[in-house]
Image (cartoon, rainbow, N blue to C red; front, top):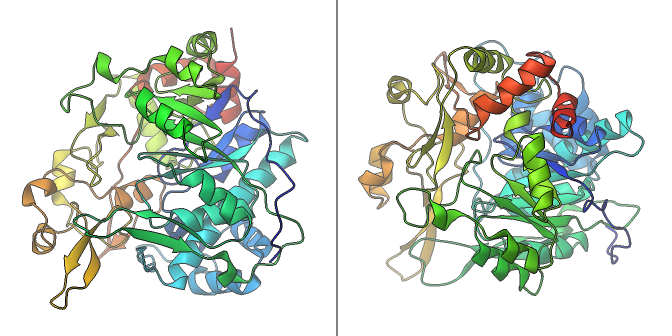
Length: 483
């Protein structure tokens, strides 16, 4: 492994006015990100559950060979070979055949879990960059989006993205104050740690990642990606800007955005207290982009007029042809949009994280009470589990895990409050089902859940009117830049 001070820089993106949002699990995949970057905007791949996504795609047969081509480029052939041998199924798994289980990720994760997460991130970024370069000799940058709250898999995903030369990392759903330093350390091949929040712990815990364990070969120095922090308050932006290792810039996200939202300031509903003062943001002197309902030409101009570099848009890309969403679900949503319309609900209970979560209301998905109640609770992926401390008889503090969406009895036996299980949805399994990677158990497939920004109907109607129901990522970029 080359351990040198990086002498290369990622693509500068301060002149980029459109950042494609990092949506869900595999919605913003390499095909979407690469297509957006080919248009000169910033393409973002979602790094959430990236290990299981790679494992299940390999089990589906990797029909065009793209995944295996990316794995061939990974700088440790032993790791890539193990990944293929463990998960790849020639011609794909049989109908109703369950996917192989993957190791659950925690603070003490075994090497197999770490390797899968790392190569998953590498594959996604590598393929996105290759696709963008194939279609544009000077494409836009490629970045990866991660959830700060999912701490255990963060460092291995960041390292995989660095190995694939990601230009940018974007993180929200938490306070990512340790990430800029971690990116610099990882690019140098140094052992790196970040804080690990453990409920009820009496001492400080941390996640440690050591690149030196993976014997990676590299013929040039590593590039340190730029880092954008997603924030929804002036206080947090100011706090991060004053950090010893500050972010490169900010994405200022409003509460109409899809996915996880920040809690309302009054804990009940969103209002004026949840609005960000853009003059204060501008005074910090950092580049920033506005997100949450800015998916239109007028709002892009408005954002630039307020001093922002541009916008981050996710919902506009949700239903384009390159999106990772199940094509059947895409067609159903578009039909509903151009018919009676579709509603998006801010669900205060759905996410096991306790954060509000946007849910599009669609038949035969987990947004329906009957569908939700028919599902047997099962936690077999565990990315949203809450780490908690349990003191042993000898006084040792042991970290254990529980999820408010797991079987109620299991959660209760682990010291959780039963009230916290009400309405909780297994987002891990539901979001994988949304991209046709849902698990099958006893012949029954997991049901999907769709997350979207509040403006789903409005922006989709515009795009379908202009470009038809088969609109592309390029059409979305052209729409946002149109008069």
